[in-house]
Image (cartoon, rainbow, N blue to C red; front, side):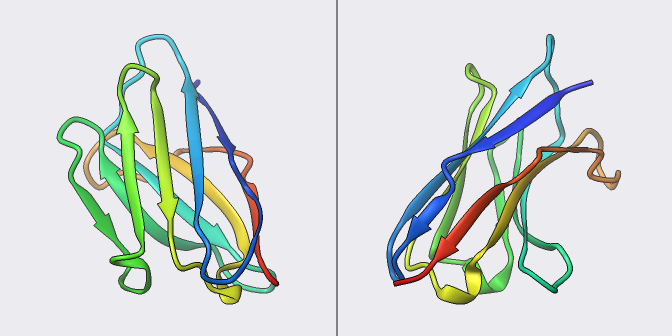
Length: 119
């Protein structure tokens, strides 16, 4: 079973940038998509975006388009979420996840990393 571990969370000022990473530890890692999600207090977990592991194509939730970028390093088996122009309402625990086939559930999750956007 793959282990996913997020890193890079912390306190950032409104309008600032932050980069998160998600490292996977598994021999012979494979994935269809790697995704990023977030959950704010009192809210349901929401989709942020995903990257197709083989092609690198990306897809984003509308509110983050143009501000967030997902990338990957296949050799390091690591996915990144570069965030710009962060807003206070984007304070949340950010999670990465994996799904292994088209249309399947996001079956592997990291423990999450806290991002706090505040002055």
